[in-house]
Length: 454
Image 1: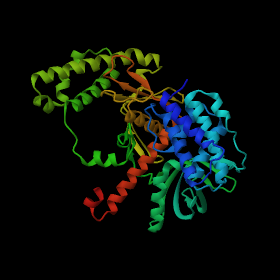
Image 2 (image 1 turned 180 degrees about the horizontal axis):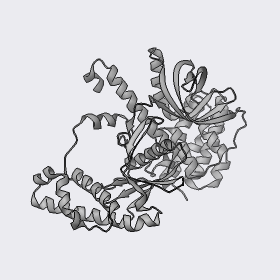
Image 3 (image 1 turned 180 degrees about the vertical axis):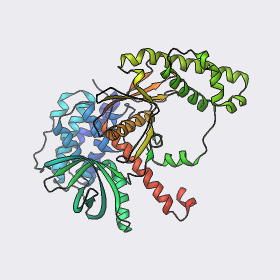
Image 4 (image 1 turned 90 degrees about the horizontal axis):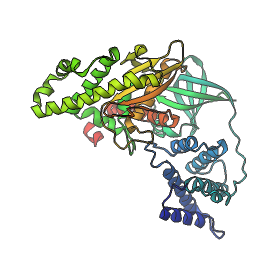
């Protein structure tokens, strides 16, 4: 089935045919044109999912999962991307162009459903020596002490400081801002720099090739602060500064949110409670806000709260059982911190099965949905649960396998929604976490704060 409109189909097909012309002269302009066409196809394939990806690396990684692409095709897509960004260091530009034509056909097949487009161009032959790994390490803390070349750095393992190791940044495409920050620190001679590496492959020469990089991991950034940097248009750490320095609004929605959280706590302890049992307590939670409301506003808030209460009660009494969550074995508002990922946060509900690595994370949201993603979740809420998953996993030694849920108490049905784990999204979130740390460091070093904030 085609994902394109008729005019889009003809436009894409015209571009593809233009690049396939026998008399085409392949120069720098054509190479740029082909890559932009490649990017546009990737963007079209992820558009409409409502998921936020700041980098082409993350988008390609997601496509591999979505369409269950074979490993060689995923490798080729990433190779094509990296060779363009690195100015063709592993394969000749003409071979790269031919590879691009082959990949454009594959992407157009995914978009249009036309299998013939995938066989117009054959995959060119080329030899790329794949890195062979001799081992793997879940995580480790290191001091970065110098730079070897554009792709390699010298680090010291805190657990074994006698030996200098090589850090390779091959897999850290998502962390470009972090790498730039490291290079700036090297130029300013502000070393050593403490870093945490996660999911580390170790090659034959003992070089470290991590999937995730954390700058200053002892700087624990709040999970919610990171998640609020993600909008439907993408992730940007500058939202952190806006949220940090602008005054927090006081309105009925904040009050409703606080009361709904109170309802959850009380119903988890005793699900037989009725709304009237808690009516008196409601006014003690935010008495000042209630005194500022008119009578009609108070009645409206009470009606809204009744709806939230009824929905929460239904979820706890019925939906939890369907999900295999035992109410009596849940922890309310447990706090976690991770010096591995450099994050901290407080969950609404955490459930762990006895003598089992299975668990569940439940995040309560009292607000309405706004442009939900393909999973029916708000972008920032989804990011928040992915970070909570990383937080909990690291605290439990990466042995726990939590399932993530978001509970929308405003909805009358389908309240509790599954938030699947996507590693590419988690990397994007940690990258924004690093950007927040970088911003805080720049604030400390800034001589002129008004100019900095401009």
